Image (cartoon, rainbow, N blue to C red; front, side, top):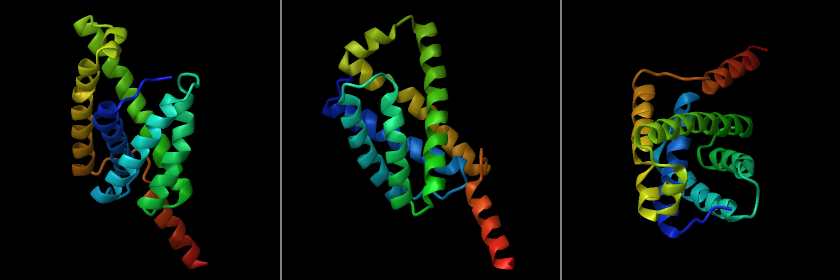
Length: 166
């Protein structure tokens, strides 16, 4: 159970969800429209805060949030449900990897423990800012050079062409 208060929801939960959605859409070849991403980020961040406040085991909140984010992405970004679930999964994996690497590096360089970071609200609010900057830079690079991990949009176009030819 994680203590989520309003500043953490506004400055951590919502931006992290929005960044994850944009990065996941870009890495799967979909277009990321700002309005749709902001709506998914706000709703997903608020639902994520509720889920994190539940008395469940650590990590289970991710398993609960993935299908919810998939549904939100499907509804607001107007892509298929299976594609949206894959987008949410890829986003969670990429965020998880970068977050783990960032935390490991930060702790090794500064010597500050996670327990110290979590105990102070201001430190907890400022802690993810470099990670967000890195992820936003990654989004710009991926968009600029058309880098994708799995171009679902292209797969869907190929499938439509094959269905049309039949």
